Length: 125
View (cartoon, one colour):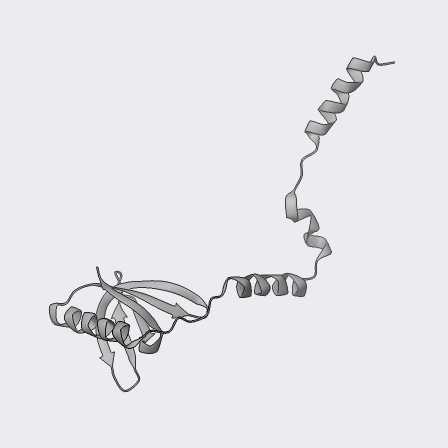
């Protein structure tokens, strides 16, 4: 038989051999629909309400856009989209006053269409 000290060493060796797989071990017990609902709930937790610009902020945004169009400067747009705030960097390609949107060209010539009502802030880069 093993002595007391050898049993402890053996047990310690067995504990070190057990490897936990984290949440992977539970994936076979959850339904795909449940996983999708959990992910949607996590998205809803981090959503924020749309901030409202006052008259002064709107005038500042308008002034900055006009200056950038005149001098062809790069702008940084802080934009609200689906409960999240995103940053867009680029040059103004077209300002559509009828549809109330700004079309910008990014660094790699990608095009973005931003609604004027969802623009929170504009800064010259």
